[in-house]
Image 1 (cartoon, rainbow, N blue to C red):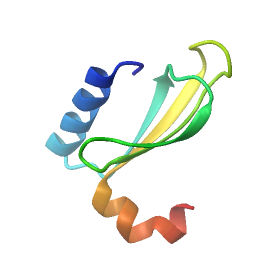
Image 2: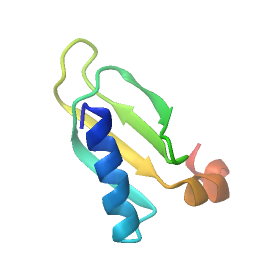
Image 3: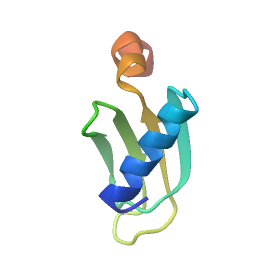
Amino acid sequence: MNEASKLAQVIREMKGYRLDILEVSECLWTGSGRQVSHDGSTILYSGHEDTHIRGVALVISKPCWNGNRSAIG
């Protein structure tokens, strides 16, 4: 999931399956942090600092993030 088009595809699939939270075990982003996608979904990710390996991510829908922000962090 290291391309913007792959993220968009993941978000489309989440909507199709009506998922609010999705764990991605092969996220290839470096470092760690939080990003907001074009539709307002929040992506929390953590990976290796220098190389695109061993990354994980949580993709959280906008309604879920807004409704549970204090519980998530």
